[in-house]
Every structure is written in C-alpha cells, then in structure tokens.
Image 1 (spheres, rainbow, N blue to C red):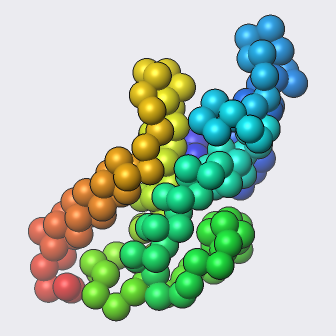
Image 2 (tube, one colour):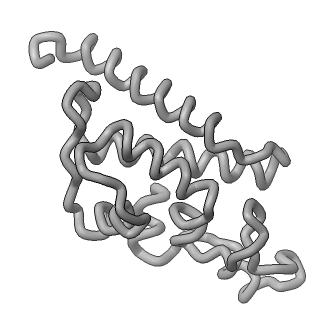
Length: 147
C-alpha cells in the first residue's frame, strides 16, 4: 500500500492516531518536526510548516498555477484534478511530479523520526529535483520517440 492510498482511505499512521491507540508508546500527538500542531494525516504530509515550504517551492517550480494554499495540493490528490505543468518543466505528468514530492517528504519525515535526521526543506527539494531528473532520464531511455 502506498502513502497516497493510505492517506486517501484514512489509514495513514500519524502521531495523533498512534497517541489515541497506544499513548504509552507515543507520549504526545504533537508533530515531531514543528512540535506545535497535532500530527494529523494532513499535517504529516502537507500542513507542517516545513513540509508546506517544500510544497510551496516545488509547486512554484513545476506547476503553472499559483500556489494559493496547501489546500491546492490536498485537493489535487483527493479530487484527481491535476494542475498544469509549467512550460519548460521536464516532460512528466502532474501526478508523477506530485507523487515525487510526496515521496520525498515521506522519506525525509521518517528519516527524522527513525534516524534523528533534521527535516530540511532545501534538502527535500534537492531530493525532489534529483528524482524528477532521474524519472525524465529514465523516460527518455524507455520512450525516446515520445519526447
């Protein structure tokens, strides 16, 4: 099961959920990154201030529509209504780009939790850009005539 599937079905494991289920193991529902808000599934993937910074900067780089709020991102996933890709952006579809951003945030989140690695928006953006470049290079190798 993917992160997106778990989010869309309400089965994503967040600190708020774990705190309700096993308060002896998870002593607080607060986000381990910002330490201010309860970590709901929306907060975990999108609304934490550092993650929102990643979404805002990645959105501005890859999509033609302005980043008005984090709700733009959430509704893209929940409504399957994809923003147009910015001209000059590598030839990937919007779902691929959004999925790449989501994956990078998810990976950085769990590196923070398990490895005590700081969540760094610039480092996550570097990871996003490298992954997008890798996907573009791979696409060119597999489908050279379509690009």
